[in-house]
Length: 184
Image (cartoon, rainbow, N blue to C red; front, side, top):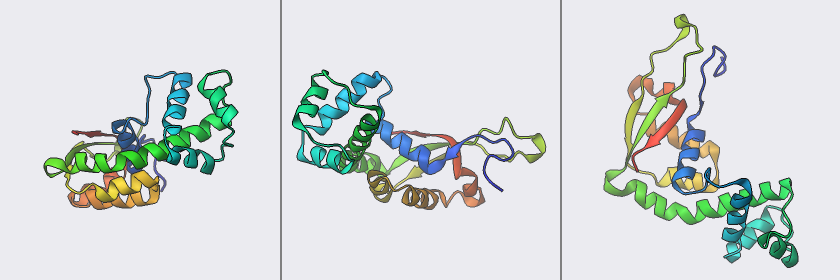
């Protein structure tokens, strides 16, 4: 049986965890317009050699005139180039934020996570499972943040399953969630 076949709605917990860590690290910037977001990403990338290296690895031709035109807003990157800039920004920001994020999440004995189970409002009553929201204090964030900083979703899934494995027999109910909340 595949997830959602009976009408449940949610996302893989590793994806929700990645999204939440991106929000804490300031990677997702919903308050910016797309134009401002791309400009801020470009400014962030052009402040270091690592940023230039990641742009090049992402497939952006590092023509100084083109970069200068993008920064001065004389030209706008194509949609494909904007997507590549976003990817390079995400990789650099995650790499730069990983050490401080790990310290922040590990401090004080760990960080409490609220786990909101999948939305079962679309599931026929006879197939609904009793799943309540849970609180879980995660004490060691090092492997989770390391997987996040590399963008390794497979490792994120493994680390999430390891972190919640002590939720008795309920832990499999939280492989997919509606969302996660952090008390960080």
